[in-house]
Image 1 (cartoon, helix red, strand yellow):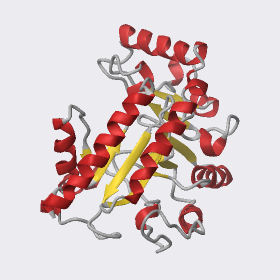
Image 2: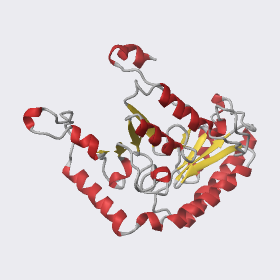
Image 3: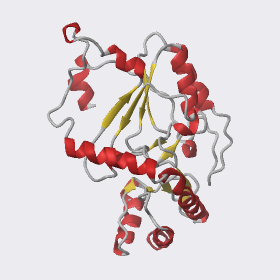
Image 4: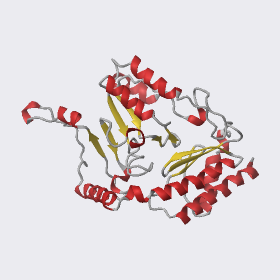
Length: 294
């Protein structure tokens, strides 16, 4: 509120798309314990929003298939495909934020590939974090040929994208990013991580049977375990169930962070199966200890 009040005069209007939070579906299509009766109302509503505002919207911004800081919320199948189709119809840019989801985090090189495959692509993709394998802070904005050509021209045409930063193009950071990309290609990383992802998914989904677990959701290496008092009823905020579980795991030497009452499990691609066992088994034990506090 403070931000919008202070900068209102220089900000542009935005249009919000409906939530894709399946566990707490705004269209009341989900029950407790991952039981969803979905007819993809959120997809149809997103299409409808774009159609209604097609003459006002210049771009649609969306994360790469999984909301990260929002609570590890995976999009329903076909969601990004529907946005891609609608933006193609009305000449609207589709911008994908793959900072958290890119480079194998969801099980594919980029999260949008689950819906779009190898051929259909967004207009702009934002990369970071895993771009350098986590070794150095580096980010990149990747654009389509059509977007690039808007800024391509002679110096005197002033078509260049002049908005730069002091620390842009650090050669060491860029070298680490290039080498990281080479490793992904040469070592066939995406193929090799598939058995690990399958093991992690099987292991972590068992937690849904615990009393204080309302939802287990995710894709690839990005998982969220939502803690509830019962069914969909949240714990009181001052109870801080997420932090209680996190602190208990820290005592076991496992450092995780909660997003509210969502426990985030987001391991590196190099994790071993025995390390997955260690993390998930410890998480189960820590969740069970909530009973003594309620």
